[in-house]
Amino acid sequence: QSALTQPASLSGSPGQSITISCTGTSSDVGGYNYVSWYQQHPGKAPKLMIYEVSNRPSGVSDRFSGSKSGNTASLTISGLQAEDEADYYCGSYTSSTTGVFGTGTKVTVL
Amino acid sequence: EVQLLESGGGLVQPGGSLRLSCAASGFTFSTYAMSWVRQAPGKGLEWVSAISGSGVSTYYADSVKGRFTISRDNSKNTLHLEMNSLRAEDTAVYYCAKAVNERTVVAPAGDYWGQGTLVTVSS
Image (cartoon, rainbow over all chains, first blue to last red; front, side):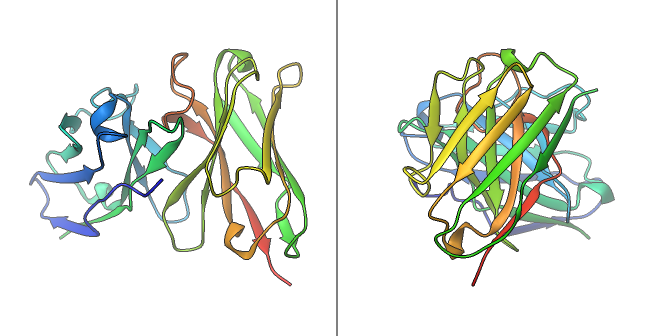
């Protein structure tokens, strides 16, 4: 199972919005509404930000939102803040009954 | 408070074996699927394995199928990962994670993660 494709890096200024894409195939992202997004700060465990495409776990800021169109899922961070600087990973269920993560995106707050 | 605490990592020679454990507390362990995710040094996340709440159903990434075995002891609230025939490319921090809800089993949607345990495969 190949990793889902994400941009290697993105940047934005405080207050701006950025959108991270996650491209897969009809056998993973496009075929199921089981797409998740994680935030990971250096040396820390990943934190679940979005599950089942657009659901936020309790305690996650509503500045984070998820969506999906075809084989591409997206995570939008609105009102970018310094603490949003981190690595972000998408994940998906696959038709092989496995999980798969994306290649990861490093978000820099300018 | 939900807590997950991994143990069992360490240095092992290629071809060797290791057993990881994840002690869970703060939730009804048998209700939720659990999974293992690893991260090689400086690399991204890799889904490794998942197990249903009952322990009846197990799932593996192709990269570990036939070498790793996931299991759980619901009486002791503990998750295990038995790793055999270890290779250099298995070197990583291994995390256990709790599924976000009862319908999630394989999908990588863990709402609580442990701190990770480092496995180093080297001669």
